[in-house]
Length: 160
Image 1 (spheres, rainbow, N blue to C red):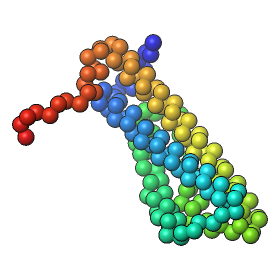
Image 2 (cartoon, rainbow, N blue to C red; image 1 turned 90 degrees about the vertical axis):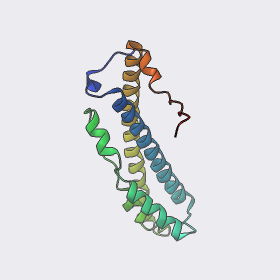
Image 3 (tube, helix red, strand yellow; image 1 turned 30 degrees about the vertical axis):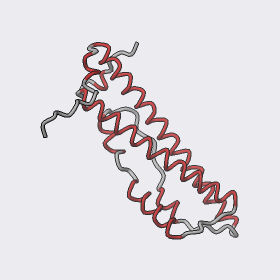
Image 4 (cartoon, one colour; image 1 turned 60 degrees about the vertical axis):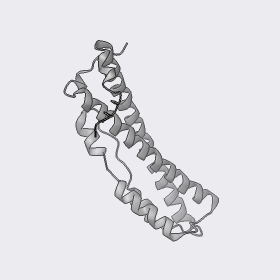
């Protein structure tokens, strides 16, 4: 049976739910970045280059804009172990693929593999925080089951 944690004592129920939503959103972003890194590694392994430079540029812009969003807020809500460092995804995507250059390709493969490791470590940290915040919610709901009802959407009134 989950027990209340002093780490979450400063959070209201709504704040705790918001924290969990932010963690879940960040985990989705990190999982997406990880899949992109894995796809880039697959391209290297298969000797492929992007067919459409515009899509490559759009992806690079998206990664640059998304870098770090939510991360600082998650760190400040519940102080625990420091999250692992994240790779500079933008620099990995601006790096030119030179498949004929074995040294360059090997270096890029090494950096992409390390980036995947960093993202995996961060994702694992997010999962630990999600598990802890879920346990806190369950503990609060067990103390007062009526709190669970506050998560349900209220029906709209017939008045507008």
